[in-house]
Image (cartoon, rainbow, N blue to C red):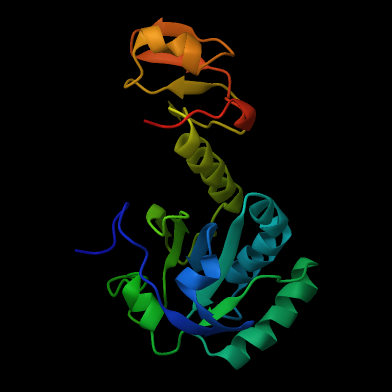
Length: 218
Ligand code: BEZ
């Protein structure tokens, strides 16, 4: 059985463009995004790593560290990052793991032999402060990912870790949330002081709760 949501994210020590990293220690008490790309010096990957560099401040604001990887060696990453910076008008400001022995790729099931038996697929993992896997997505080599979506999911994960809400389709930060069915109607006014709207007994909305009225999820 491969890695699943809720499993502990496998720990590893790996060489990166910013030195050796031991994953769990490097994450500290915060969140993390680990994402693989198929191959250095390829066009779609170039756009992806460049875009992630432009977004990385947003991840930092959310106490989330970003870590890229592929099975290419360190010298390849170093040369390619110069190209990314030049062509994408940015500075790659997060580490990229060099995993030529496929240690991390195998731990995270990033090589899908029926798609390609040497390159990693486009995997994304979000890891919570408890080191558990909160999100896994897999894209084929031919399709660049939407990193705004990863940020959107992180917003949802962080909100729903703090409040008894879930986020509806296409939700964006600041929009109304759904009160989880486990909250009895009689507890709604106290738990959601901004108010609520009941469409069906199982479909209740509330404005996005704020950190200052933080409630414990229970
Ligand atoms: C790319 O990043 O452009 C790419 C990588 C591997 C296979 C196909 C495309």
